[in-house]
Length: 310
View 1 (cartoon, rainbow, N blue to C red):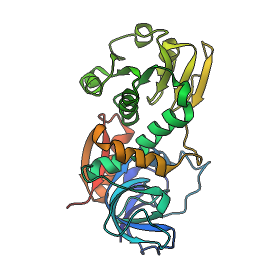
View 2 (view 1 turned 90 degrees about the vertical axis):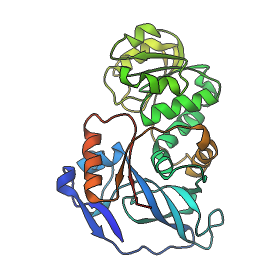
View 3 (view 1 turned 180 degrees about the vertical axis):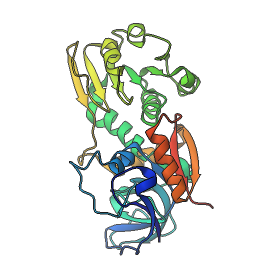
View 4 (view 1 turned 135 degrees about the horizontal axis):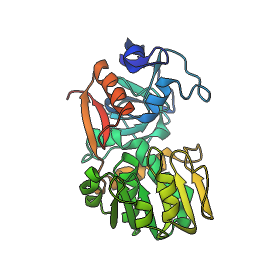
């Protein structure tokens, strides 16, 4: 079985390798999936660079990857919600960079027939963030007007769409080059951060501000936009100094959040959601290296997907 692994921490071209791995046995609570596509995430890049080594110990060679989609080839005898031959979406603890993966049954849901392999693989982590942030972290206290900073990114764009489906008024910011995309997803108002003082434009208008950017100056603008006593949620670092009273929250995955719950909702909403795919690359080591290198730079909006040839 072909898999793409990292042999150590370091640059993509130096440490990413192709290996032949033995198939892992399937116990009563697990499912084997032949992967059709998997996504490359910023978290994978951070792991490979060694930025997570204080929190997570890896045994090399280590196969990266949490998000994928494929066809069930074997199920444990306690699994009833999927069967051999089903097309599924998966969220693995690791190991999706390869031809197959074995995952707990609770991390697998059926993929709608109308959902592409690229969408199914690419939406997993950004959707889990979107769903759990809105549904569990904030819930009813989110308010009626929400600002999404970084609305062209994978998480930001899904947040925008999910919030609009809930009837919220959504203010959005992104770069000027992504204005058409963000507006097409339903933003009520838009500001280009590279042309406009976004904080001044939307000052004191949002009950909740969600900073879905990579960091930088968005936090300062976000505080301007948040109403006094509102919510400020950061996907990265919270502002070092707070300028308004409010509920300042940093979103992070939690074992209390159910993958099954969130992914089931993704499958149900699939026809109503758009995920921007930046590029689909062939199933090769060179593609994995290229995707990692692109994520380290300033990639175009959208997900990078590695896909098996049909």
